[in-house]
Image 1 (cartoon, one colour):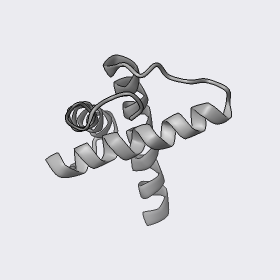
Image 2 (tube, helix red, strand yellow):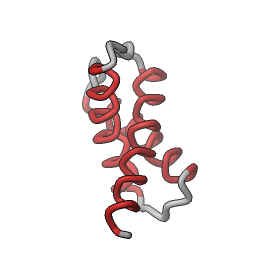
Image 3 (cartoon, helix red, strand yellow):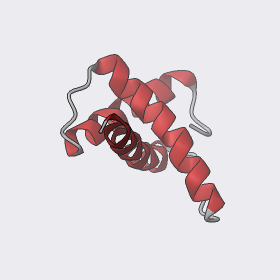
Image 4 (tube, one colour):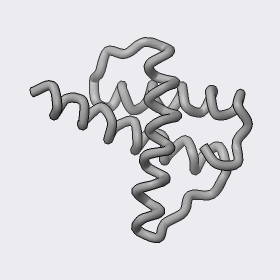
Length: 82
């Protein structure tokens, strides 16, 4: 998560992962929510960068990107498991 410190990245990542797992109705724990949010934000920032879209390094923007990334990751895991 660009521009955020470690503690902020963990907090925003956990919140984003929780929102993403709630939207996708995935049963994940606290650690997995944090991981989904942080890795999801990295993946979504990369994909948006390919399209020429760059999210601001603020809590809200990175949280939104983290939610999108968490949803993408959950969908990918579900597609691979099938």
